[in-house]
Structures are given as structure tokens and as C-alpha cells.
Amino acid sequence: MSVMLAASLLLSSCGGGGGGGFALGGAPIVPDSGDGSAPSAPASGNTVTYQVTGSLSGLATGESVTLLGNDQPVVISQNGTFQAASGLAAGAAYTVTVGTRPRTQACVVTNGTGVIGTSNVSNVSVACAIRPQFAYVTNQNDSTVSAYRIDAATGALTAITGSPFVAGAVPASVTVNPAGTFAYVANAGGTVSAYRIDAATGALTTITGSPFLAGSEPVSVTVNPAGTFAYVANNFSGTVSAYRIDAGTGALTAITNSPFTAGNNPYSVTVNPAGTFAYVANVGGSTVSAYRIDAGTGALTAITGSPFAAGSAPNSVTVNPAGTFAYVANQGNNKVSAYSIDAATGALTAITGSPFAAGSLPVSVTVNPAGTFAYVANYGDSTVSAYRIDAATGALTAITGSPFAAGNAPKSVTVNPPGTFAYVANFGGGVSAYRIDAGTGALTAITGSPFLAGSAPSSVTVAQP
Image (cartoon, rainbow, N blue to C red; front, side, top):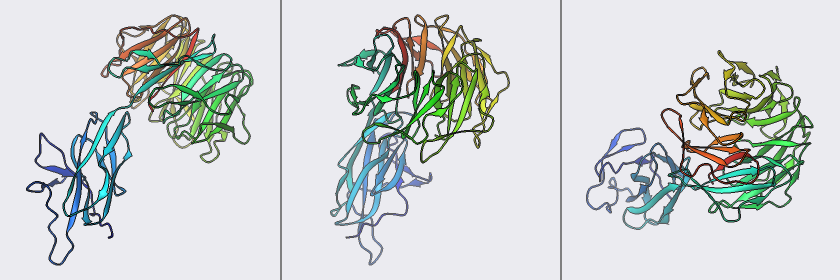
């Protein structure tokens, strides 16, 4: 029999153990009376129809999940009961699946498929839980990658079985794709190592064909937000290598006309959240190259005005999650340059007050997922500078307590996807870990920090498969 769905899918809250709920548009709905097994009352002469309902548990505060009831979406932002479909006749098939999972969680559906009988279906359940997080650190002097499981509650790092994993010669930079399924390492020896990430354990398995050829001294690697292209800054050859990522295997294939010309000694590469522009910090030229990314091919085209002036010896570049501001750590003059990004052209314009003071030899800059705080690793004085970002202007204001102590010669800083912890790879040894105060952005070293790594940790990233 054909499946008949209601014009809109209704969502109800458990609201303290029952009672009313709300439709997607916010209008109150009245729950069924009795035991919930009665069919929807038909109009005279119409077919009796039934509903599919269930319960959601474990959803974190501030998260939402999109469920598909017979392919029709319903967005749920709190735990409790939900209605996935209605208007289904006896004998009709039904399915409830996860359409879009929460940003930091995985959700599992139980009793999500079946055939309508002669009563409403009410035993569908959806359970959500925090997805595991893994940290990866390149060890430059012993050509390995250390891998850790992150304790979601404390932020502590525990080495996973098999760690450290073999990399190429002089691994300088590590990144993961947005889905957390593949990891890529730029080896200054001239290659890019590629790995599949085990979603359960975090272990790395070398992808067939790895390592892949790059330019001369590749020192930075990034992946676009769609996970379709990878870009590598080649320090000695003054170029950016571009690759298409095989969605199934993670293998890299050089795209047509790669490598693309950059400035003098390109040392860091990043892509904006929309995947439309790429930016490269040229440490030897004190500039930032900007490119438009071809959505189909991944090719780079320099935008008008590029390269843009930066401070002395820009070593790292990042873009905030909204794609409105770019930040560059200039190790030569101990400053952080800040720019507004033209949404249409990708051009950079220095914002009022830029550059902002940092510590000694700032070499890495990152922004938290909420776009509210920025962190800079200062290689020269073994600290991390922390700033509040003005949402309107992009200006940086040092937060109370900044700079925060790090290990010896911090080389790289990153923030985990939930924005709760920060990690710093200290070139002099170990990985520093901090809890981030959600209100102030202040850093507090967590118990056990710094954690052991290999020789000369140079880069750190976090994956959440």
C-alpha cells in the first residue's frame, strides 16, 4: 500500500515526563489519549492511518539532530519523545534514520524500520553519545606520528595501541579531514603521508599509494571543508601542491596545473569554511597569498590584490569559523596580523588595531570552533597567548592571565571540535593540554600535562570520527 505522510512532521518534548509538546513551527500539540496505540481518527469514509513516534536520549545541550522519518526531515534539539511520521496506512513500510548527526555526537537508531500494523508505532529509540576524539602529533626528529585518545571529561591524553605510527622523512605538519576518517602528514623530505583513521580506536593505517609526492620541503597541509581537496605548502619550491581526495580510499591525486605559484617560502596554508578561498603565509616574503578555489577541480587562482602585506616572517595563517576574519602569526616582529575577508572576492583588509602584540616568536595561530577566542603558540618564550575576538570587528583583546605557560618551544596549537580543550605540541618535548574556560577563554593545564610524545613534536591536530 502507498505511504501517506502528513504535511508536516511534529516534534514533542518529554517535558518532565509527558504532557504537551510543540510542532516544528512552535504551535502546541495535544498528545494522544490512552496508551498511545490507538490509530488516528479517520474522517468518514477515509482510510485509518497511524503514527510513528519514539524517544531521544543522550543529546548534549546545545546540539541538534536531524532524523528522517520515511525520508522526511525533523530537527530535534532536546531529549524526549518525537513524532517521525504520521498518516501511514496499515501495511505501509516505515523507516527512521539519522540524517544529520550532532556536531560532536553519534546517534544510533533502534527499531527504526518495520511495517505498520493496526496501531501506532511507539518503540523507536534514538540514543546519542559523544563521539571519540583522537589527537595526532608529528614527531619531526624520529619521523613518526603519535596518536592519543582524548578523555572527553578531562582532556587527558592516552597513547593508543600501535602509537607512534611511521611517517615520512621529517614530518612537519598533520591534519585530518572534516569527517575524521583520514589523516595527512606533510613530510619536509618531499612527500605527503596518508592514513585511514579507525573510528573506534584512532589507529592509523597507511593508505595504498602513500606517501604521495609533493614539492620541495612541504611543511604544511590542510583539507577543504568538503573533504574533497588537500593543499600543501612547499617551503623551498615556493609553491602549493593541490590534490583531489578519493572519497572512498583517501588517496591523493594531483589536480591539473598543480603545483601553483605562491610567495617566497610558503610556510602555512588554510582554507576558509566555505571552501571558496585558500590563504598561504609566506614566511620569506612577509606576505599572504590568496586564491579562489575552483569548486569542481580544486584549482587555485590568485585573487586581485594578492599577495597581501603581513608582518615580518609570517609563519601561520588561519580563518575564523564564520569565514569573516583571517589571522596571521608573524614570528619576525612578535605580532598577529588580523584581516577582514571580503565575502565575494576573498581579498584581505587589515582591521583597525592590527597587528596585535603576541609573545616571542609566535609561530602558530588557531581560533576556537565558536569563533570567540584565538590562541597563539610563542616559540621563543614558551607561552600561549590567548585573545577574545570581537565578533563585529575581529579585533583581538588579550584575556586575563595571558600569556599562559607552555612546554619548551611550543610549535603548534589547536582546539578540539567541542571547543573544550586546547593542545600544544612543544618542539622541546611533550604535548601540553589545557581546559578552556567557556566564558573567558582562559587556559588551565589539565592533570598529567605535558604528555609524552616523540622527538621534536612539531604539529598537533584533533579528529572526531
